[in-house]
Image (cartoon, rainbow, N blue to C red; front, side, top):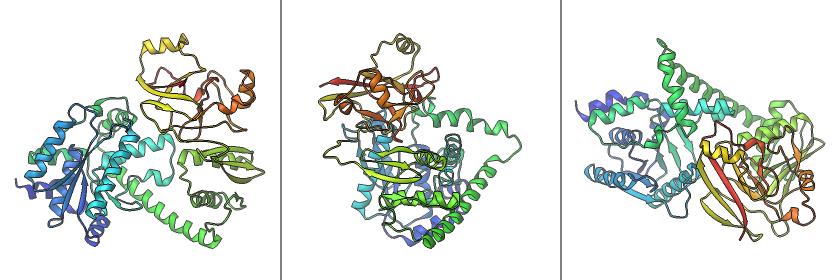
Length: 464
């Protein structure tokens, strides 16, 4: 069977989102294709080359340099691009970039953006497929999600300087493998995809992978996809209604620059809250927004940390955005990385990770690590990147082994930490502002190691 017939049969044109077709036709410049060398991105490359003949294509490959096979895969991909007469650009991870999933993703997209600017391109094709969509929905349902989160990833996602395009969202992983195998196209498989160390892998292996046997005789893929489509339609309608509501309330960039208060129905109240925070150039994630909303709606006074330089304080139902004066109240961002970080107070914070084991658990029970200078927690419970700041009045968390939240001020007093010393200790938080540990105090119970822990994070606080 010819190349064209295989693509037409397994990746038919009528299953590519019509909005993508219109976008590509209306957007000049080369088509950039993110390609890892796996079956998904190789099938994406074949689809783009087949249906947009005559358009210049650039294959973008980022070599993370972590696995032993990375160099071989790069060489093979260069050879394939040369055989197919496709321009290829390859990036390499700098030595100072860490190895966490978030850090690797940021380094990869920074390379993509650089290459797109270099070649005058504005469309970045990504190989996310139907299985990725289903896995994402299942994970976000369990974790909690907004309507926007439940319909991601999107076929077209407009970024500040380019557009992400995903033409494979209507195709299953099985279909993409069939394309590569049917045409004898070489591809690579990442051995880490077989591990259960990551949540997505566990969802793929133990939940989504069993849908065929559980839902026998039911076209569950079609039903799942239709549900996602209906949710997207409702999201678009609600966004239109929200825009109309905001226009009527005339919420401008200057409205409530430092203070926010409103009296209206709950859905409108939440919309206004989200837009107010957005207009302060604050990117508040869903989990943290839920925390703010629930506390505000309960009528209690509270303080929530938004980032290393600002926090939100509520008094008598009024929200006040308080910015930190860096000259008098120094805070700084600490991104996850391996090795030692030198801190302004003359101490160092060393970050390591280690797979959970029974031997490690026994050491934890025996209290081998001093809590005043070491923290051991569950890496999956923490929301990265971590960040470090100074202590603020009102800070509170639930210490390890306790059932209730305690104010940090009271914990300091119990440990004999007073005066200037309490202002010199770093407060280590996760991305959502939840306190994980303060040297000298017990770690937070929320991030403790349990029998279900897969990966442990270690923080060591020492004099430089």
